[in-house]
Image (tube, rainbow, N blue to C red; front, side, top):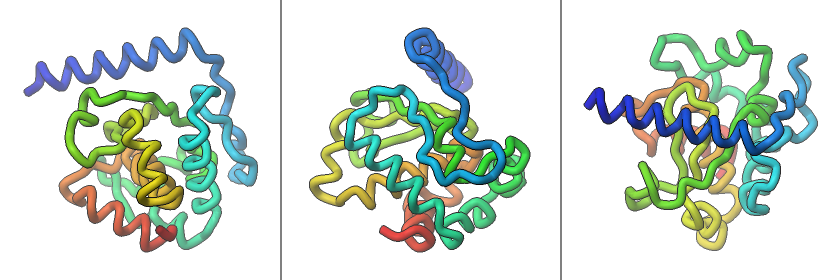
Length: 179
């Protein structure tokens, strides 16, 4: 089990290193707490559907009810996700500019039926499951994809899973932020 986790971490690091070597990193949009501007997206040439989903997630995170997610959930380390955002001088909106969106095709967790995106708690890399993610717009709409982006952002900030289950997290995102 530990050996498998170590390989996964090395793989994630290799993917991140590859991104750093090919994409210019721009700083987060606004560290002052005001984050009305849509964040710079990484990498810059994202699929238009992914870009729309992130922009919609950003819009939703501008609502105070949606922002309560960051105080609703705790990281595995026992602190509220909002505490982590405060520590790094970010808001839920501006933190989206820190995330990297990578097409994982159908490898890793994307090999599992029904998974459209994943990340590891604390990682700033969000893996999108090939065209399964982008095709979901036809069945579920841009709102669902924005929910997935916010769900993965919560994991990026340190939220584990089981508990709460993936379904519970998604229900809470939809309840607070719309569906």
